Image (cartoon, rainbow, N blue to C red; front, side, top):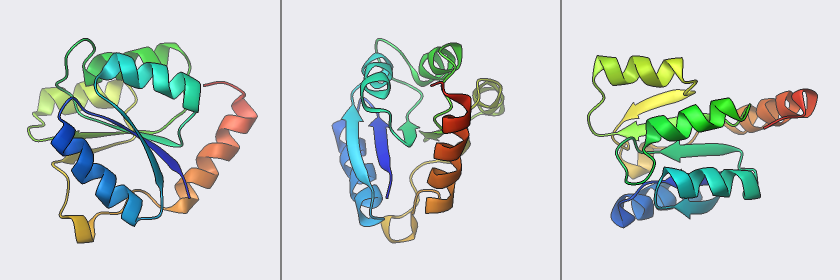
Length: 130
């Protein structure tokens, strides 16, 4: 399946998300803030990034903006406990693929299907840029 980059400053949150994603058959790499996430995205080319919004050094908005500026086509799923309308709109403007308020209960959570990964890879191959 896909390689998922989890970007969150809370180790507990990363562990919970990791567990859910790995149960879905995906591989996981982790970053503790947006800057680490940006660096890991460049070096590991994940199929998807799951990020929190509130983090030190570079927050989720900064990560989305930096990815967009680099021409990245990696889908980004924003996970946040409190998504206000203004934050949701900003994430959408910055190119977030999906937003989830909190992580759904583990047995119910599955990242987007393999079809997303295949479609994303085909798109990226044609665009030749990340």
